[in-house]
Amino acid sequence: MSSRRSRSKNSSGSSRITDDRINELISQLHQLLPEMHNSRSDKRSAGKVLQETCNYIRSLEREVDDLSERLSELLATTDENHAALIRSLLMQ
Image 1 (cartoon, rainbow, N blue to C red):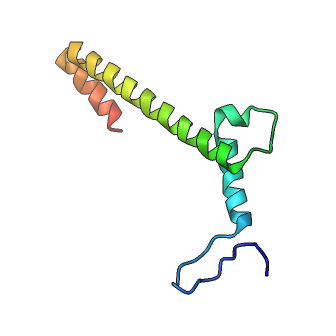
Image 2 (image 1 turned 180 degrees about the vertical axis):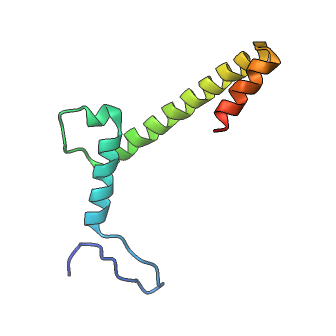
């Protein structure tokens, strides 16, 4: 019996994903991460790619929080006409 996972349904009726599909998804994540995409090593462990993905998402969340805070401060110190214009541009 092969150690490969299959897409066949198991006894509970849920689909299982193949090892090839997992590797494909890990490879796609690897390509999306700026730090890893620029590295010379094309072969990274799945665990390393997933950890870097989590770290990157956390850094993006911090960046969004910082930008939101800066925008709030800007809107608080801007006259109402400019603030309304900025809000309308953000909603587009």
